[in-house]
Image (cartoon, rainbow, N blue to C red; front, top):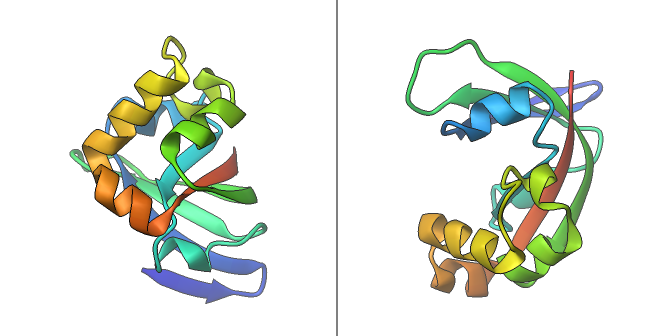
Length: 121
């Protein structure tokens, strides 16, 4: 769902544990997503409301600081500190492998990927 507001657009996204907690606690500051049609609408200054994918936890909001597009999760993972991506003890190759397990390499190749830099509200 996307809501229009004077201060930008509000997007809704869901996160699994432990990523939900890491974003909520300010430890994960970059959200990785496919650069698909839905994500192409996200711009700096917009807000994202995150909800937990598996539990009825309270949702929370973040402000989008920047959006950067990369051809692959590997290239994205090389551009940021692993902790900012929610994978503090992983190599860029391990991060890319994990993300491809969610989205698949074909979707990654067709769309590219986005690094959405966020700040908790």
